[in-house]
Amino acid sequence: MLLSGKEQVMPRYKATIAYDGTDFYGWQVQPGMRTVQLELEKAVNQMAKHPAEHIRVQGSGRTDARVHAVGQVAHFDLPFDIPADAVRKGLSTMLPYDIGIKQVEIVPETFHAQYSAHHKTYRYRLSTTEFIDPFKRNYTGHWHRRLDPALMQAAIGDYLGEHDWLSFVASGYQQKTTVRTVYRAQMWEKPADDEIWFEFSGNGFLYNQIRIMVGVLLEIGNGARPVDDIPRLFAVKDRQQACFTAPAQGLYLMSVDY
Image (tube, rainbow, N blue to C red; front, top):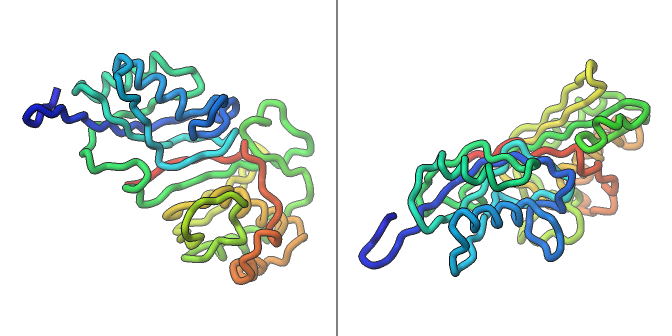
């Protein structure tokens, strides 16, 4: 236990978490809903022997219902000082099987899972089979129409850089600004799996932004949009002009970098 005079200093733990989002109503605690944050907070408070003050688990950001994570990051403070790996092992015994604790580290009390993050990487997996594969239905988006990957490849680079993403954010967003920077935008085909993967890294992403970005690329690949339409969408700042949102189950939060 760490003491400062008569005050107890609660050590801060950083956890890297993976979860299957299929049966979750997203990350954030919501009344009456099963969420990842809710399950983690139940386990953390159980580990802390149900302290008088509820311990909150702060994530790097929200993920929506059915969205998965390979490398979500969260932090929490415990009222005692025990080794990080003991925390990882203890939480792993308390959590449901669709949440995994990959790593736990002790970090300075100034660390914040959300505000200390420099950038995030998301991947979107798209199945291109003619039918919805029952073994992929919870883990890929699906598109059975004609697609020209060369058109999407030609367009995806237009996402790079700092832009106002107002045309690419769903209603209900709460951020003060819609300006974000994308550092990396890539796509590649996985012919053996009948899939196309998209990957984006940036300093932050808005509500449904990645899924709308993928949706625009699919419309370009299908010929429903011109290949040079992305700069126009930045200019018009009109969500109604980028209506299609790719399904949630194909999206994965891959990593958060600090």
